[in-house]
Image: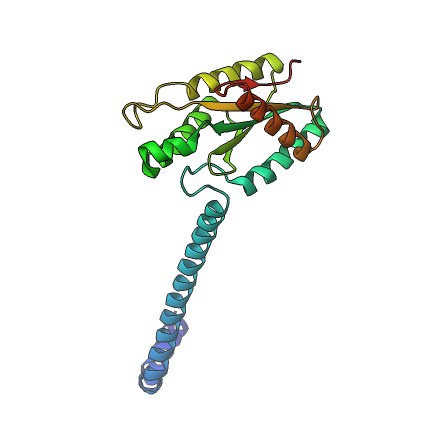
Length: 231
């Protein structure tokens, strides 16, 4: 027991004797320690700043990508995005033996609408038509504004041709509803042409060409109608 007490006393004495040296070292390196702590703090600030910059850059990239692929006015996809997504649908259809339909929608006498009611009303008509097209289609279908008063859509017919016909009729009925919500006395109609894959083309360009021809056939026949392949 006396040996343990002696060892404890020696340790305490050593601690007491070394305390002044510890105080002197701490005092001597006080500025160094403060500088070191300050550097750690600055490092943390820089890391947080870099994280914020990266988050902002990612958000800006997402926003720029969205803007690059959507129409400024109607907020549906633009021509570039339509071509990219359409090619993806076509590639998938070739692998899975699926079918789909490309639609072209053109606003009848849109120039007259602008001339009679003004360009602001004309813009609202385009926005309204884009909204009706989106609301008429199902998830996975594609709507785009591909020109001034021209829209395009891709309908994926997972449930067969009858399903596609029903969607197109619903779409056309929606387009023919009153536009009084846009402007009093406003009358708007659309001409719609379609092309079915694979019956009417095996490339996106050929399908677009056929849909465009069908749409112009409606124009020639008096406008405000649909022209599709009878399957």
